[in-house]
Length: 474
Image (cartoon, rainbow, N blue to C red; front, side):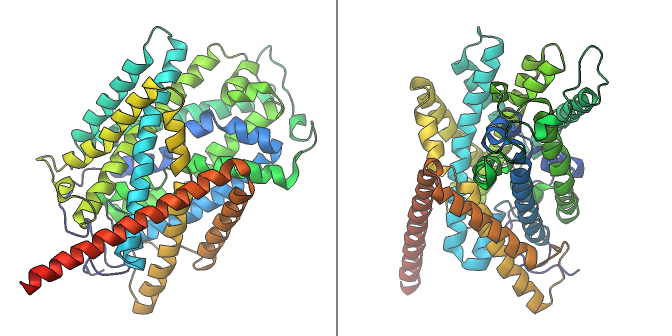
């Protein structure tokens, strides 16, 4: 396939640079990108938050996960199609700019960046707090500061180091999930000595499979959809991989089976072993291991959850730095953030992305339980906005590419039906969110923030155009 201009609107030929041709280091191995794609879907939301969804919907939470999983599969295939054709560290921000103009691209980029830098702080505090439950003598403030320093250093040392850390983090999470599913199957088949199998009655006991009906499934959907947030970082990382198109396509193809195995497999085990009405679902994985009489179950799951949070912190810091770097490359952020070190690392972008995390963490530690929840509530629905814009961008760019007869290295199957189905699922989730008093405020706050960012971006672009016009006139 011929190499076309990577700055041309729409899906063009494969390029390994950003729109401005920045020489990022292409050091991510295919195995690292693939394992990153596998690991980003396995976070603390699965290990600690899945119990909330079970308590909302009962065993029918599996339906909620199927719907959310289908949405993620569609979004990742759409994003993979665009990223394979045009790898860029701005990913969905770049594609939104191609499809709808620079204001849309800058808006989604800044919105996502703000969310991620806030989440980085939350993950640092959360990991420190979890670790302190095992060893109370460890001071949470210093642990949190230590995590921030370590992962800032990892990101400053280069993308190869980041990729290797994420590779092994993903290995730990995958092994933990597979071991958990294996123990659960052995328990249910009565293979464990001195432990009676609970059987399969919990799928229909205590009110049936869907004790709270479709309302419960909808409530759980609002909870579980956010567990998949972060999978889009794979498309950002593709810009610094050795073979972007081929590696990303392989990573995207694993999305479907990893959701089936890791999420649905884990949830099925939990539902079968622990009644959905049980208070033990506050820590669902530990509850199953306790029934199986596995010693040190709670401590083991806590450590895995810490690894999951630190993995997310590492990935989110990387993603945030590359997003604001891409914005700077396109003139949507201060140009200084686009400077690269001798290792071809955007040091200023990394520092800018982590600085907010240090500040927010300090504020949270000064006023625990007040600062971060408010900030997270402000940007909590960002992933829904990003996924909506991603699907809309793919719809526009794919139709544009098809009309031009452009050959794409990776084509999303089922277009346009699957893209429309994804947008339909998102519309359903938005409707459910507006109907829920608990989540309505969060969504409306995110919408207001999005509009405010769009207004600032539009003003900034108008101001730059005016200055350029005056310069040309002079």
